[in-house]
Length: 444
Image (cartoon, rainbow, N blue to C red; front, top):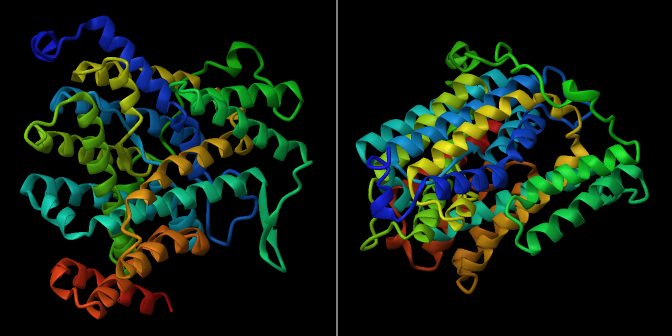
């Protein structure tokens, strides 16, 4: 075991790797509760005709197993201390844009995730993935990440009741004297404090403290003994295999755009995360990442597994840097994290106390972290600033990640050509320009 994970070469040991794996798990454990809440559209009281909710307990099980399997792949195959789980942003796109906005059944949406995962595997194995990534301008990649951050934060504000609908101004400040809104505000303040003072797992601990506060003031029913905390592993039956059963429903223009969005966001989220973690751990040599294809394969295979089980795109988590900061250097860190995700399967009863008011602060904090990408966009170049700004602003305003990407990718070749920088536009961008034009024509 030590030899396979190269403990001696990396200067690590079992104790260090175990603590690093535990640290990574605690830093990202919030996804176990936020993902089921998001995919089940908790907080949305009235659903449009034909739209149904996913089973929250089944999604909890799918989330934990997909995270465990994906993280185990990364640890054993690529031997990197990088953990995976259903990605924030992609789950919001799945639930709020595809299912709630487009009215596409969640079963078909899962089939779209499966298709994107299969394409991702093929592109990784054939080497085309890197070429496609390089075709998308860095500024647009950064804008997409920041735009998703604003979108996630907006959902958090909405679910908490801090921001509400208004007939005159579309949006307005909610009733901040309402007990449920005050609970979310308390959770946000606590989470900000924990994150600001550098507590690893601050988002997760913030959720726990908010849930406890909710029980103290009577807004959340406390668990009834140990049965309210630990229980049987939830059944996957409501979601398992639905992606395969509805795979034939994905062959439409609308689903093509959905699949492209799943693929696009996962592409760059994965690349950015792996590079960030590898940099911190000192793995990059001569600007190259050893075993990069193995890491990308592990990530793409995890998406296929997750979609088969019943959850949105599974991707690498930047919270893995917490484990690296705790000394994790080998794939054994990921093995430990994966085991904790499997152990978490027995704690599904806690879903009853992790309400929308409890998860809302986590969404807002994650949004803050994702918006840091704004600082690296070339705002001083107008031809870059316009498409980047449109991507960022239209995602929350249209309640659609896909629409934000589409608008920005349509404007990019236009502004670049008008500026006389047409030679810098990759042919792939022209192809996406046409696809997204057709997308809007189809929607009309």
